[in-house]
Structure formats: structure tokens, C-alpha cells
Amino acid sequence: MRIFFTITLILLIELLNFNSIPFAQASPLMISEEHSSNQNLEKIDFLEEACFSEAGVESLEKCKDLIIYDQSNSEAWNQLGRIYYGLESYQEAYLSFKYAASLRTDYTLAWTNMCAALSQLQSYEDALDACNKSLSFGSTSEDSINEKVLTWNNKAIVLYFLGRYQESLEALEEALSLNPDDSQAKFNHRIVKSLIHALAHMKMSKDEELML
Picture 1 (cartoon, helix red, strand yellow):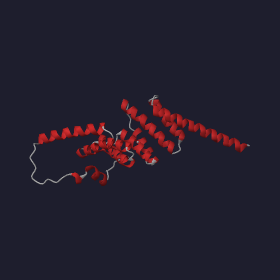
Picture 2: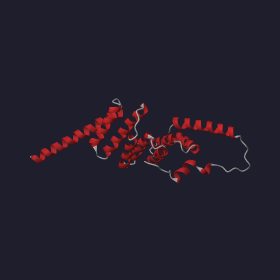
Picture 3: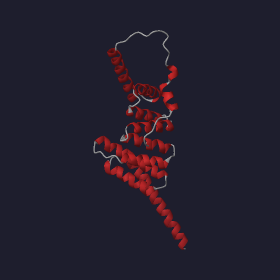
């Protein structure tokens, strides 16, 4: 799973889907402002529940509809990115996470998610920057600690793909220092540590051969 960003016109047009909005053929009925406002609130509540609780394509469409009502909803953009990520549409996920972070620059989870999406796109240096940006925001809340564990784990994966194995191991140790029971960090720690030991053994064997 990055800075101020204006979503591309193409993506906005796709999300707003102007072609699906019919033109009025006659004078509309007059609806009171209060009634209209209540209807909108009910609609937004329904879309929020569906966007954040459903899965797959159905949830994707509900998130898009929610964004039509409130394009500045950073959490909806982040959720849209999570759904795209689950559908393996990593470029769309990246754009959604990036826009969420542009709306709220200290949105640590959006930066973390952007790191993951960029990693899937094999843009490892940019992914590393996104993870570092997420880690730059300090907080001691329980949710923040869980997010930092995820970020350190994502950063470790990026460092692994960059061939920076010792740094990857250190990132995983940071994750485990925050939550020693995190199963993903523990698993990745074992993998990276085993790889470092194997590489060290291979180097030692090669050095011994050269000495013979």
C-alpha cells in the first residue's frame, strides 16, 4: 500500500458517469429544501454503509456513487482504492489512494495503501517514499500503532524487492517491536532472516573456494 494530486479528468468522468444522468423533459416538481436535504442525507448514509460493508464490484459502484455526492470524502476514496486493490486493479487503486491523501495529507493509512499499490505496480522507489511519508506522522493511538505495523511490513516488502535485505529485516523488527504477535510480520521476518543467512553462507563458501 504521494502528494497533492488532482484526479484525472478521465477518472472523474468515469466516476460521475454523466451520460447516465437523464435530462429533464419538463418543468420539475418543486421539492422543499428541507425534504431534499433529508433525502440526500438518507441516500449518503445508505451509500456509506454499502461502500464500507459490501465487497467486490457492487461495493465499488456504491463507493463511486458516494463520491458523486461528496468528492472530498477522503475515506470513501481510500475505500474505493481498497476495493480496486482487491480486484487487482492496482493502477486505479493507486490513483484512489493518492487522491485520498491529497484531500488529507496526514491520512497515514492512505499513504500506506499507496505504498502497497505502487509495490504491486513495481514502482518500488515511489512505494518506499509513500511508506516513509506514512511513518512521518506521529500518533500513539491503538489504530495508529496498527497502521504503523502495516506500514513497516509494507516497507519491508518494498525493501526486499529492492534487494535491500538487511534494511527489510530491520523494518520487520520495527513492526514486531510495536506488535510482537503480528502474524504477517513474523512470517516475513522468518523469510528474510533465512534469506540473509543463506546469502551469508553462500558468500562464505565462495570465499573459501577462492582461498583454495
